Length: 262
Image (cartoon, rainbow, N blue to C red; front, top):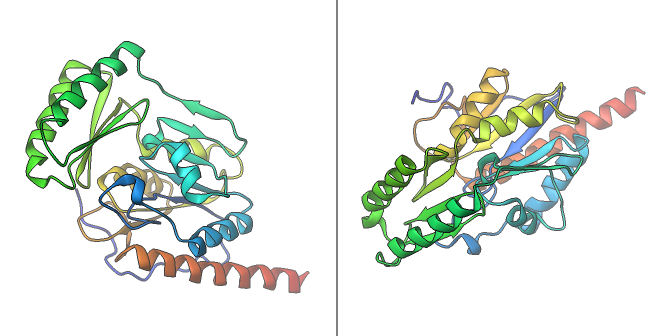
């Protein structure tokens, strides 16, 4: 993986442009917690997302490894366009839902097998997402190698699945599904089409999103340390919150200027 093109945390001004915004959630809009269900997005951040969605006429989407139902719960009462499970399910701005599913027999067999394996490793956690499985080892870091071996063995048996490593997690998801494809799909639809994409994420799972946005001459932002294809960088979640607040001030000022000129 190539280093970030721009290691400076100062992002370019978005004044005067027509942008579409895509945000990862865990590690980007919300601090990472030891248990997925412990994650939350502060009320002020949810309000800022609402304001940004309004200012961009709805061109704001969440793009996450979480199912869409969990994304809805995290940003409630907002209901935003969203790509869940890395794009395996996607809700367009119209409300139309696109979903990839695993054959029922494969899903059932895998859930049983994976749970039996992880039961042998205290501290690990199996998260069942319907069309994908997440094998968490944040509370059992010594199990990283065993988890990765298990995931590789499953993918070798089921070619319809792909392996996606992340921060203290390995996911098994449908082949050909990733965040870059989800962003591309959004960008073909209103209100995203014709805009410049901005993608903010923190994990290996976001790299395909960065590449997709770079190919459209958009703005890709890596949160945290580590090599990345992203062109810009913010140090942590708190910096994302601050940037979002400053971005709103900038866009609101632009809008006031337009009204004045009218």
